[in-house]
Image (tube, rainbow, N blue to C red; front, side, top):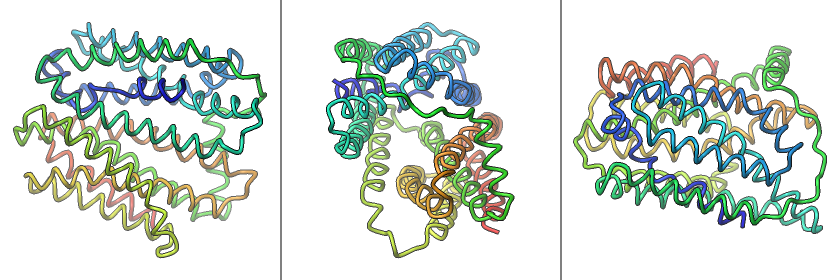
Length: 375
């Protein structure tokens, strides 16, 4: 049931054509879209702890049911959105949807296995669940471009249908026996503790976190930069889904087989190389727009797939176990925090000067920030 829920909840047909949808149906540009994405990220930051508390107190099943209900409400609001404010409200509700599901799905799996005395199977089954999520996104992206050309509302209609199925699968789940979690701190407390740890003789940890923030906030922006770039090249919307599907498969493959490079490069060296690669991707695609830029932007998924495990390993190797979870969670939170101004900046630059100029600005931000982080 959890696997079926995962497929339905992540079959986001609208993902590869969301920016054309904003343009054609709502009448909004890339800047307004990126402001909405910034609101989405801000809601996730604010709701991280409250939704975890809801999952612990209400139960895993109820939290997932609430998540699907929020998804249906959010997509319904986007269906009827006819203004910037309406679109932002829809994005905020979808942020609540993702916050409620984030962590709850993994906790439900672990608690269910723990109840059966099979917790040793968790890592294998959680990896399978995560892989299922990526393949669901890729498959839905492949269909989404064709659905949009058939009718602009078709991808949203498809999401609402599969979310209704996700609700049914969630209602059929059994709530596992409650297992009390350790008390978690507020994300801001995590950030403060991380800063204290970094400034007291752990400069490498601070540098790694800064590198990861620049790298992953940029790859997140590259995901959304793809659609206006395709519009610049006058590609038909049906290709958007094919290309998005290709990008997600590249990221999944890089993540799956990236461990084969372990031992050949230091983690920090690998992160610096990836950051240089990201700078070159943005600079080359922005300074000389063309079909070669498509392959460059899709390589952002490869950077994320290779880089994320490297960051985890680099931090794990340098912090004590008592502080490890706090540092990792704060590093993840810092990516969301930095993504907000970067998304607003790139959205403004794209509307004012074009997506090519926005990519060049992102390259400059990464180059300056990455140099400081490396030093």
